[in-house]
Amino acid sequence: MECFIFEAAKKYLGIEAQYIYRIADDVKPAPVPLVPDCHVGIIYHRGDLFDVIDAGKLLGKESSLSQATPYVILLQWEQRKLGLIPDRIVGLKWLDETEGAETLFGQDGQTIQMITPMDLWDMLTKLPYGS
Amino acid sequence: MNRTSIKNKLILSFLSLLLIVMVAVGVAQEITENVITALAVSAAFALAAGIFFGSIFSKSIVTRLTSLSSVATEVSHGDLSKNIPLLSRDEIRDLEDVFAVMVKDLRTIISEIKSVSEQIENTGKDLSMQIANVLTSSREIDHSAMAIAKGSEKQSLIVQKTSLIVEKSVEQMDEAARQSIQTASKADDALRKTEAGETNARETLNYLEDVLKQLAQNAQPIVRLSGKVEKIKMVMNVMEELSQKTDLLSLNASIEATRAGEMGKGFALVANEIRSMAENSRNSSQEIRGIVDDIFRDNEAVIAALKKSEDDINKGRSVIRGVVGTFGEMLAGVKEIAAEVKSVGDVTRSQVREMRGLISQFQELSRLANENFVSTQKTTIGTKNQEGQIQKIVKAAKSLNALSQKMAESQRRFRLHGD
Image 1: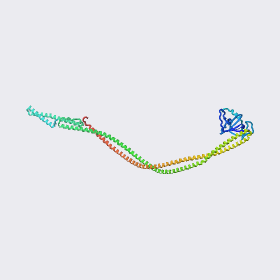
Image 2: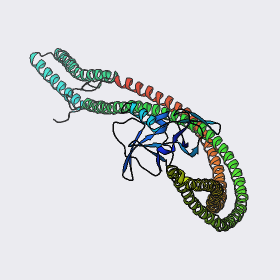
Image 3: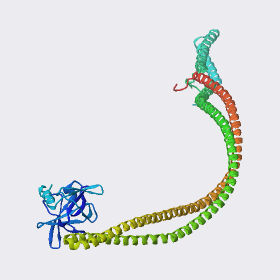
């Protein structure tokens, strides 16, 4: 399984490569009112609007917006679109075994937590507005 | 009134008596025929008439003489107020006139004596007052002379002390004049040394100017190197941006290749290689950036050191300029000091000359004070003598007063008209 690995909230996270639409840089999300704190804004990319989420704040407490030119991982699945700002992008890796979305894989002595875009969406939708 | 002398009166009286006797003889002869009786009656009548006329005549003379005698007695007792009655024109009248004139003259003399006595008494009183005043003045003069003598003595002592102090001051001023000459010589030395110091400071300033110019010339390549390092950093930024874009591009290419499935595996391989190259390029760029940053920091440190050296040299230059200015001020000051010291020396010498003249004046003043002291001593002795003489005058005045009082008492024995 081709897996896209990135780092956020002091953890290595992996998403199946098929959900990755593109990696964008040098984007400036437009802020949206009455949304959770981790919602940075929305961007317009090649005819589509993406909700951009701060992965560090969504999955932990520290923001991932500290980088000078943050990359935005654009995810697309089931007519849903989501932008994710990580701390660092590791790249694409081929992982031999999969045991579901929560399976842990070894990576340079580290563990990689596999998640799906839907998990992220659910986490986002469970957050209260303005929190 | 016609004058009638006593002789005439006597002759007239005798003739009258003779006539009466003759009348009486004639009457007696008529009455009686007896010659003897007639002679006896006539003699008796003549005797009675003689006694009668004699007593009348003598009474007239004795009465006047008694009156004159009583007036003379009153005059002898000092009563000059009595007047002598002038009844006839005989010799007694002459005596009365002479006596009256004498009494009148006596009155005048006594009056004059009284006036003179009063004047003498008043004069004696005035004299006593004047003598008392003169005595008081003499004593005051004596006190003043003694005070002047003491003052003169003190003045003499003060003048002598002042003269000693002035002589000491003159010696000190002489010493000061000698020291001012030495100070002037030292000021000249200081002037020469200050001029030498100013020359050295100016040479140092010129040397620092040269060093500063050399430093600025030496700093130019380093500054140019800094500019070049800046350009290298800009190129490195471009390279890093290129590697970042390449990385992103290769990442997106890998994603697209993954989405293409089996058909995209070869492309994914190429994309991974490109990404690997981009990462290597980025790592190399970061290493180069580190080196360039080190060079830049070293260069900045060198430039900062050069700048600091330039600043220090500029500070040193300003300090040395200040030193040069200070030397200039010192030079002017030392020149002024030398001139002042010379002027002070001249003034001191002039003052020494004037002070020597002052000392001679003080000596003259001391001599005058001594003379003054001697004169006042003499004045004191003179006033003492004068006081003794005044005492004698006082005694004489007292005697005069006593005499005038005696005279007044004697004069009071006489009584004049109106007393």
